[in-house]
Length: 117
Image (cartoon, rainbow, N blue to C red; front, side, top):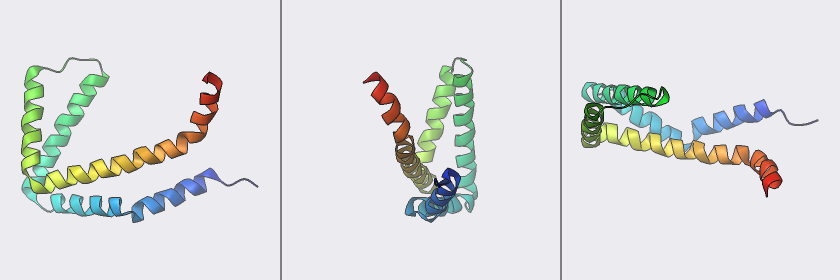
């Protein structure tokens, strides 16, 4: 009987929740959420980021004013230690997820790589 992939996926989810990277992310998120100024800045940054991503997806041009606004908010984010640490924690978690994706997709890479190679 073959292993149920969904059971493994749920085990991976539990392991991620127990990981040091996720624990640190939760701590940094709580620190931002409990600081009104940091929380407002983080929300503002996320909204600008999402708006620009949406424009890119739709193939619309991003104006110079929008780029300048995004840079100004990014500078303010870097100056706020709590938000900067949260962004760093998000980046760490993203790197873990990228590595997990590589591992999960390895069988497909091996399969299709053997056809073209």
